[in-house]
Structures are given as structure tokens and as C-alpha cells.
Length: 136
Length: 391
Ligand SMILES: [Zn+2]
Image (cartoon, rainbow over all chains, first blue to last red; front, side, top):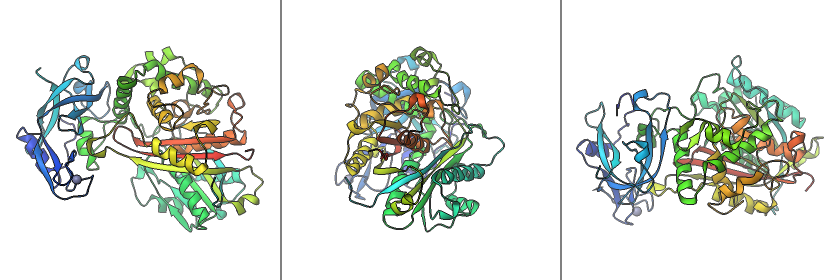
């Protein structure tokens, strides 16, 4: 996969830990101490109960494909990075997160097990979680 | 049935252009405003309510001021709700409320845009990072069409929906578009044409996607007192519902849309149900948008949309649920990449008996539904139920 000139995430005080963790090879989710919700994307209060007692937690980095779509063309995207598989992966911890799956589209199916990989960006403090078929 | 003051759509106008390289977007706003007011038999100086989602290409929260200034409208009430292409259907409901509250009695809703002349790659273009969510989506190349593609893929997985069934939706729209001289694509297509067109983002083909067009449209809503002074046949707004819907912290079900709630609310306010609908305008950014909406609005059970659309169900005038008789966004017009406005306009035409004769339905009650933004992440759903004078 070529990465640039894909957009780099905008990091803010609520999300910098997520992106920095990814740069050191960890996928984080957040969990609410009060109601137990495990959620994505990161934010400073629980979107279920509004509790501010929310904790970072390292996810297993494993999950299964909830859905996917293979973009054959995309303006504003590197040509040699196509086709690009955009997917939702349902993490074993619960939340469905949008991502890419770095694999031949023919080898991807809903329900297939996948595991996380991290792709560097031009910002050394920020890496991006993507997924590959598990045990590949 | 509601015991509240009724409110009516008295004017509706769709810009005939689909490509406007030599016009400004504001000019289109003005032309559609003028057209809808003329249709109602009212003048610009009658307008005291201004409803607009602004000018998307300006990306300005101040665009209602731009529009009020350009048109020279003296408004006592303004609403600038914007959640994408369904906004204009929401505006109908908001205008009804404002009219019932006596805040205004002639409400103007306008939409205009020039994405075709501006060369926008609307559905398949990567976009810049603007919102907090974009940093978790657009970095992955999540475009409109990959979002809807994921929804279609999951729907197929859970319910066995096929590409051929999705294609039936385009086929019905194209059957209708052949009678619309303004439609961008007037040639009828077959299921084979759709499934053999190139795949843009699996499992969606080029012909599963709507057109990119310039143009616009406008509506004029009035109080009962104003309506009584008009010669024009008016359409009553019987019910309205809306429901912004979202990713839900990771619990999103991408086979379901906000139409479940917006439809239920609109039907409850109207005191009617899906079986009462004679004609439906359903936002058709993609074929899957229609399929999910049909299920969520209650025209069939969840998961049975594929079977429901087979066999000409959606085709006017004889299908059980004739839809988008102007050709819809799939074949006719998708001004400013926002299809809600034209959905209401064609529903008004149907209720007034002014649709193209070959697709005119004997309709007393119609529904218009919009899905703005993008399913599979965040979208606005808005539904209105409309009644003609014959009911
Ligand atoms: Zn909580």
C-alpha cells in the first residue's frame, strides 16, 4: 500500500493517545467505568450515560469483517493504491470501526477473522490501524 | 388526524436545467424561487418565512443571509436546518410548524447548486478532513459510494438481496424517465444493463448510482388563510417526521436507517400508514438507499425489500408502489447533490395530477422521504405525508 498523499488524521486532545498508541503498535478502545460500554471513536465522555469516568483499554486487535466495499476508482486518491477495501471491522471487544483491509478483495468475506496492523504516516507520532486476514 | 391548523404546499418548481455552466448558484436560487412563487400565484413580497440549507459550495453558516440578501426577502422567520439532501423535506415540516405558530404565513424553501459544472466527483471522491469523525473515516478512503456499498454488501449478506434486485430500482426509474423531457438519462435500461455496468465500489455498479446534475428547486408553503385566497390547487402536509441517525459509538446496524423513526413519526402525525400511500418519492442517491428506505418505512418487512421491488412494484402507473415518476435522482436530477427537494416536487405533481401523463397515478395520499449525509455512518432521515385536495 502506498500511503501518501492520503489524508492524515487531525489529532486533538481527546484522540492523541489513540493515534500515539497506534504508532507504538497498540489499538486502543475506551470503556465506561459506570455503564460498561466499550466504544469507538475516542471521546471524553461516555456517549451512553455521559459519565466522564472513561478509561483507555488495549484491544486485542482481532475481530471480524462486518462489511466491506472495494473502491475501484477514487478521485483524489493514489492510483496505485486502488482497488481499496474500505470496511467495518467488529472488534472482539464490541465496537464496529471503519478501516481498510489490506488483502486481495477476492480473499475477503463478511464474517472473516482479521487482525490489526499499523501503517505509518508522515507524522511520526501518528500511525493508522488497518486489518489483514487473521493468521495470514 | 391532527386537530392543528393545516398548512399547505401551494407552489412547487423544479429548474429544468441539468447543466448550468453560464449561471451562478445564486441565480439558480432566484430562478427557482421565482418559479415556485409564480406557480403558487404569489409574489416575492408575500414571502415572510425563509427555509434553506444554504449554499453547500460556500460552506458558510451565513449562507441564509447571503440568500435573503440576494433575493431581497424580508423574513420574519428563518430556519437553516442542514443535514444533507433530506434537509428540504425536514424544512417542509419545520415550515408547517412555523405557519401553525403564526411566525410566518408564506414560507419559501430553496435549493440550488452546480456540482456538474464544477466537475465534482461526488460519490467516489476522497474528501478532506473536517469533522472529528472524518479522522476515523476519510483517512480510509470512505467515500459516499463505499459507505453505501458497505450497506448493500451487508444487506445482501443478511437477507440474500441480489444485485439484480437492486437493479430493478434503476429499471423502474428509467421507465419513468423516458417521459421526462428534462431528465438527464431518458433511455430505459434493463436489469442486465445495470449489473453489466462497471463496478464503482462493490457491490454497486455505475447504474446503481444517481446522476450528478446542476439545477435546483423550490417550494412555497402557506397558511390556510393564504391558501383560501389562491386559485391554485394546494397540497396539505398531513404528517412530518425526522430522525438524524448515527454510528452509535460503534453499534451501528448499516442495514437500517433513520426512516424507521422518521416514517413512524410522519405516519403517526398523519393518522395513516404505509397501506394508505398511493405514490412514494424516495430519495435514490443509490439503489440501496431506496431498498433500505422501503423496508424501514414499512412498505415491506425488513429483509424483504429485494423481493418487494421485483416484478414492477415500483413502476407507474400500475405497480403497487409507484415511485419517483420523474425518473428520480437515478435518472433525472440530483441538484446540488441533494435529492430531497425534487422528491417533494414530484409528490406535489402527482397529487395535483400534473405528473407526466404516462406515469400519472390516481393519488390522493403521497409520501416523500429523504436520506441525507451517508448511511453506514451518519445520515438525516426526513419523511412527509402529503394529501391532495381530492382526499
Ligand atoms: Zn457509560
